[in-house]
Length: 132
Length: 162
Image (cartoon, rainbow over all chains, first blue to last red; front, side, top):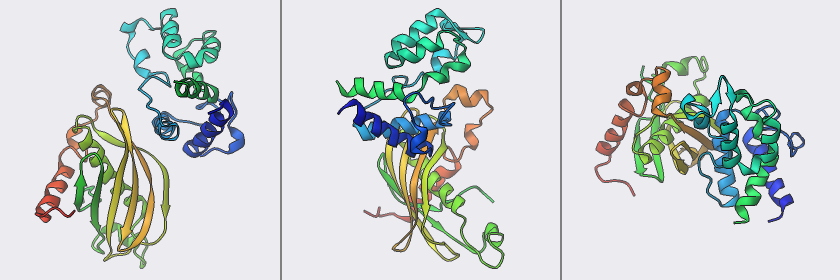
């Protein structure tokens, strides 16, 4: 499957799952800020991606796992900001979001973690995943 | 009044599908307001019935370890009205199961007619999550009371319909 085919399919999935218009979906669109996604939508999106691309997506594999930032014991968060160790952890866990993580690293507040989730990072994830 | 929107199970195949029965009666208070002089089973309560059926189906598949809550109704279409005296059969198929939640495809039938069909997505609450929020599992629909619906279903069908 080509990159464009994957993009079109991801776009259709987001249009269905988030009830947005075709033209609202662009590669740089952020799911929460731009497409109005809520946390409950992510599981729905994962189910649809699994079905449409015939893949299995583990928890925390595609989207940032909230557990990573839930406990101060991990050292990944300090005073509402993701620490360098936390950033390393996200880079390791979400290689498909490297471009978004670069932007995030400039102002790594936990409340900005949601901005990592863009249309393009989903497409990159599927490209990697389906390439085997 | 108890928040039971299914009366019993007619079929229950663990991890696969279930059929629940809801008998609509003019004795139900809400039908007198919805609408005065023209009682119609509200679509929202049919969604609740399908969600209770699907929630139990998913909860059972996960061993009832975590409370299951309705997260999202991505799609629901209504094709006809349900009135007192009708018996609704909620046919619910489990399409996705994972520790974080699941999804079902669902259809509400009255006789041969499909009166509603759609999809429902559920979340499983983590124990620390609901404890922190004062969520009382014992009051949750499937954990205690609604499970009795399954027992009644079994009692009502000594020979399991195939």
